[in-house]
Image (cartoon, each protein chain N blue to C red):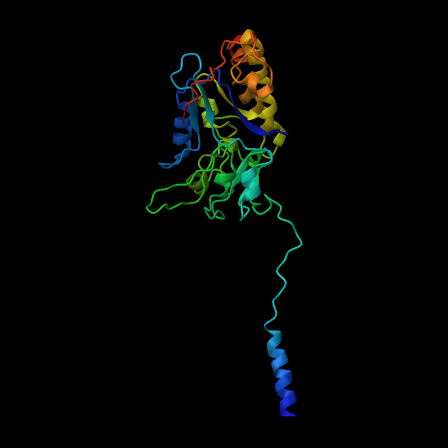
Length: 218
Length: 79
């Protein structure tokens, strides 16, 4: 049974924003709503600048789903977290609960008007009839129903962003890291994430960001 | 007699002031309200596009796995 996930390789992402554009174009996402965005840290610092493409991660135990007071979220058989805009009341609880900032709210009007929540659907549409006009207008394209993967991952020029069954894309990434050789285990962030000290203790290992410039940009 | 009748009527009327128990014993089960989405493999494949047997989950998963592996340039290019 497939469990659909995204995986972004920070070693490959070149901040081209092709994924953001592909998502916007494919789903005709309105102005002010970004289902996907590229986050860059250490912007402009040579050797330390890293980018990653972020959207809904379709969590296995999704906090947005847990906190929704009207229970408008549901999970498909492939593990994609979707929601029903007819039930959503636009309260914003999911936005506060999500660690990735995935839920978006259209703010087209004055006085902090907040519409119904919009987020990445893994290009799986919503609860409306598959491939119908109503589904497209509310949720965007249903590429999974067409046998395709999300547009952002399929459009990624460097294949930094992988989308699909968690097992399959994890295998791709693992093999890629193994082929990268010495840059595999020392890949940026790997040591801090898994508690392995970088080689040559005392100085910054190749590919490891210096601690001083910690500016962020999204 | 009238006093007893008034007393009985007032008791009945006061009964309307009682509050109905509103506590539910059932705990909230997230993700249980929306139940009207269809599975992607239940769709007819497009004329020009990936093919699978309508309603067959296995064949849909097989073709989507092939598509996932196309993201792996080492396999796509060198094999």
